[in-house]
Image (cartoon, rainbow, N blue to C red; front, top):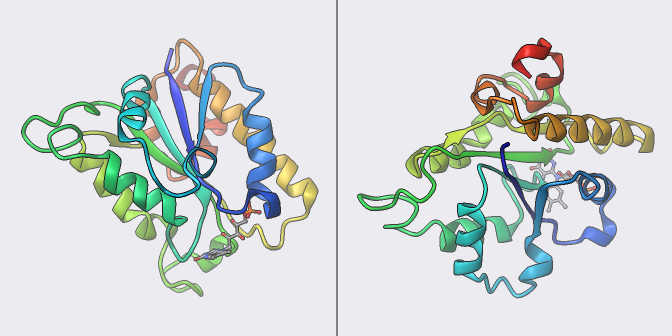
Length: 201
Ligand SMILES: Cc1cc2nc3c(=O)[nH]c(=O)nc-3n(C[C@H](O)[C@H](O)[C@H](O)COP(=O)(O)O)c2cc1C
């Protein structure tokens, strides 16, 4: 059974509409490890050994965060800079993460049609996620489809509730004993997992 780790990053959870609700729901799924980075490290003073041990203990790793300035809140960069050490995560002897799956669970204020080459933001979310995608590759991991919730500024509470239920279903499927994580590298949004035929889920 795949061991799932969620590295969660929200700098102002008390003001959050989307991630506060997602987090509450994810906490009810058995067997998923939630690592709240701002709670652990309010001064960004990351315990590298603790983080590396957590990574070693899991197979599928998500960075969950709101999409900020086409990227992530600051602690996510700090985490990547410090935790993915040369000789451990990459380089000749850096094989600790080999074969694991890495991705993002994100919410964006912009609508999906704004994240197109001819849309308001001029690029797809995948284009903006390139540093995560290539970082995963350099560390010998597979970048899996990200779970993207678009247009959250316009969503009301019932939309967010629906998105939350979908994400819970997706995460539950990842935890099924028969689940093949290879499936999630071929999707564009992890939410599409719910549309796949049962035998490949
Ligand atoms: C500092 C900051 C930067 C943001 N940058 C973006 C952005 O680049 N693209 C986008 O679509 N939304 C952007 N947003 C909107 C957030 O993604 C949105 O508010 C968040 O996903 C909502 O989640 P929450 O309710 O959990 O905070 C930004 C919001 C803030 C506060």
